[in-house]
Amino acid sequence: MEIDNLNKTNFNKTIDNQEVSLFSLKNKNGFVCQITNYGARLVSFFVPVKDKAPIDVVLGYDSIDNYQKDDFYLGVIAGRYANRIANGKFSLEGKEYSLFVNNGPNSLHGGKKGFDKVVWKASPFFNEREEEALELSYLSMDGEEGFPGNLQVKVIYTLTNDNEIKIDYEAVTDAKTILNLTNHAYFNLNGAGEGAIKSHDLVLNADSFTPTDAGAIPTGKIQSVSNTPMDFRMAHKIGEHINEDYIELKQGIGYDHNWVLNKKNNELSWAATVYEASTGIELKAFTTEPGVQFYSGNYLNINNGKNSKSYPTRSGFCLEMQHFPDSPNHDNFPSTVLNPGEIYTQTTVYQFEVK
Ligand code: BGC
Image (cartoon, rainbow, N blue to C red):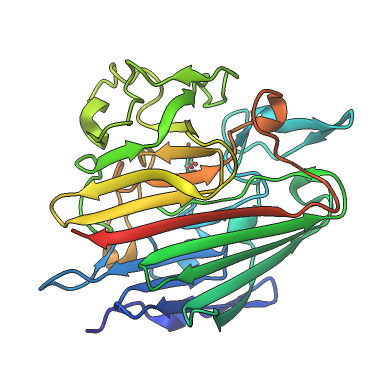
């Protein structure tokens, strides 16, 4: 079955004197994952289902031109600091650093030209299990977007034969800096452009979350999810507490919060499960990170998605595995400092099954 339905020539472009293209990985079960090295973005993920065409569960665009205009961080690797830093300011060893402010008074997802808008070096390879993988690397120069240190980053996407998108991150710096990387894919288990995600069942392996101010900056408290709409320890529909006046949810216009994952150390462990009964597609997410920003696509407003599909509000959700927002300004949060000589690592896995 032909599932590779994007016109690859729309992805071939020279940006910043570097070649951009579209890479396809497939596994032995017929799953296909597409990635571009512009922003290290996940473009599509096709899940084979019984008696029907494979379902593409990742929101994306048909061309690099559209990716260059994207304001929604579709599929990106966000960095150097995924999520928010209050007022775009943080200090290291008594020195204050200022970042570009692009989200109200705050800095979001790396600033003006974050990792989502740069061209990564790409090399496809087979791993030791003969699975298809793509290595993406990027050297972020000292002072880029206001962050200190020359930072060498490597991200490997692997499509495993267990039907997983496995994302392995590594980074080193030559000066003390801060780092928080994540993948920002929007998923829809009905298929990209096939309605809202409110009917999906969600389970989060988290007893607590980090409440925020109106600008989505954590207050610093770690609050129990008990008796709040943030309690996804048992399966609930994503839309259960999202209503027209948002009175029940109280915070913001939908979910856009960091949950504190239940874990003892930084082992790779189960973080979330999302299931859509109408397609039978289940996504299980695992990570080494301490937190997950679960975002219910509140601000989505895209009318030029793949295959001319629209992606309106709540037509995709993100499970952004990461350190907590604004960690550099909260001593009680796990540290996001990276020192010379240390190696930043992260692994996140999105595993799919059709039930
Ligand atoms: C943020 C949202 C934002 C979205 C796209 C998420 O990580 O938490 O507030 O709208 O990214 O930028």
